[in-house]
Image 1 (cartoon, helix red, strand yellow):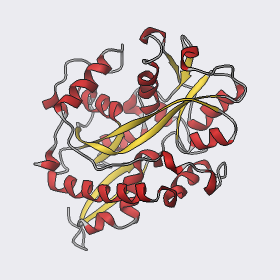
Image 2 (cartoon, rainbow, N blue to C red; image 1 turned 120 degrees about the horizontal axis):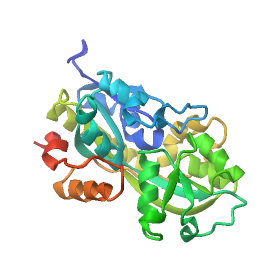
Image 3 (cartoon, helix red, strand yellow; image 1 turned 90 degrees about the vertical axis):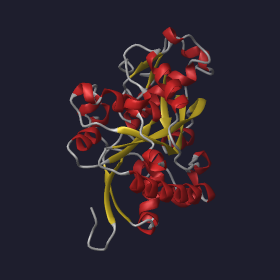
Image 4 (cartoon, rainbow, N blue to C red; image 1 turned 180 degrees about the horizontal axis):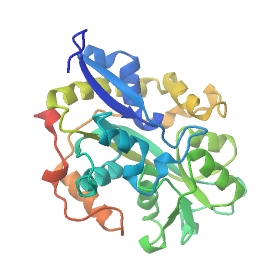
Length: 305
C-alpha cells in the first residue's frame, strides 16, 4: 500500500531494544525512507522494560501481546530469537493462527548471559546441575540457556523456571529465590554494576518472520536499510545507548552501559542447513516444538529472489 508521500507502508513490531535495535535505528535515522518505505514500528511490550507486566511470558505463546497483534493483522513482520521464530512459524497453523514464514536470519546477535547473585556460592556452570535457571519460556533466554549448559551438564540435568520479567528475575536472583537467571542488555550491565557474577555468555541470533502479504522486494528494501543500521551500530554502539537506558529507567548511567556487547550484521537468507540444524536440535527436547514440519513449509527467502 502506498502512502500519499509515495512511500510503501509497512507495519512491524519491536519489543526489546537489544533484539530490535537495527529496526529502531533504521526508522529513526531515515534509512527505511531512503529505500522508499514508510515503516511504522509498533512497540509491543517485552520483558526488558522496568515495570513491564508478564504478558510476554504467557504459557501459550499465541496468547502473548505481540503474537496477538500479528494474528489480528496489526503488523506484518516481526523478529525474535531464531528458535522462538521457528516455534511460532511451525506451530501457527495447527493452533489456528495467522501463518508466517521465516524470511531471513536477522540482524541482531543479542548477547545473553547466565548470571548469579553477589552472594552466590555458584562459580561455574557445572554447579547448575539440577538447579533451575530463570528464563522467559520459549524465548531467547530459554533457548540460549539450554544451548550454553549443554556443554557442561547433561540435557536431563538442565532445569529452567519462569521467574517473571527481567526486573522480577533480577530481584529473584539477588534474593537467592533462584540460583541464576539468563539476562540480556541492558540487564547484563545492570547486573555487573551491582556486583552480580557472570557465569557464561553467548550470542543469540534473531530470525525474521513475515506474513505472505509482505512481498520480496519490500523485504529486500527493509533488509538493506537494516544492514546500514547494523553498520552504524557496530561503528558507534554507545551512540544508541539511550534505547537501553530508557528500558531500565535510572538503573544505569550512559557511561555504565557496556555497548561493546552489541553486535549486528546484515540479514541473510535462512538456509536449508540452518533450518535442519535448528529444527532437529529443538526436537531433541520434549515440548519445545511440534514435529513434522519441513523447510518448504516454514522458510521463504523471497527477499533474495
